Length: 127
Image 1 (spheres, rainbow, N blue to C red):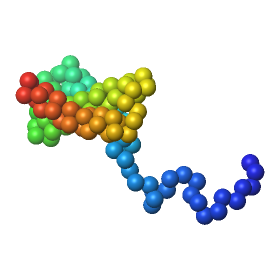
Image 2 (image 1 turned 120 degrees about the vertical axis):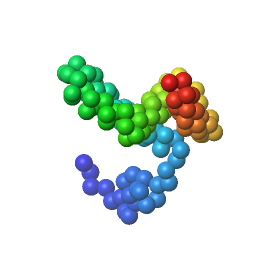
Image 3 (image 1 turned 90 degrees about the vertical axis):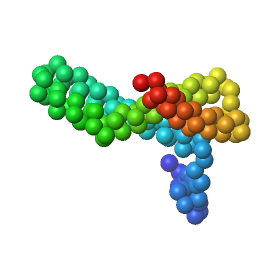
Image 4 (image 1 turned 180 degrees about the vertical axis):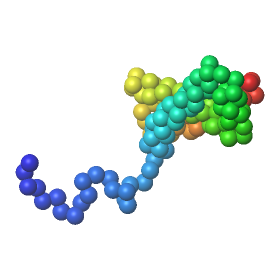
């Protein structure tokens, strides 16, 4: 690679000068929720394996899953599921070339945030 004098400029937007935007943060959170749902899925699989293993082991795992901590984890998992779903729909809309303007993109970002909380609330009520 050629020896290029780049001066004192950073090579990319540096953390000291970069201001996070709604679109970048919602996109990053979409990836985080995808990983978090994997952990939640493993907990559900553990619960099902415990049910197939025997009543004593299932009682232990079921106690954890139905405790306050288990309820909190599952509620946050539902929130992550709705957020990730709505974020995926937004990315499909972007893939079609729609909603790429800054104002439209910001509206979709706020729609994902508000929509995921609303759909989580409706899901909890329905269950």
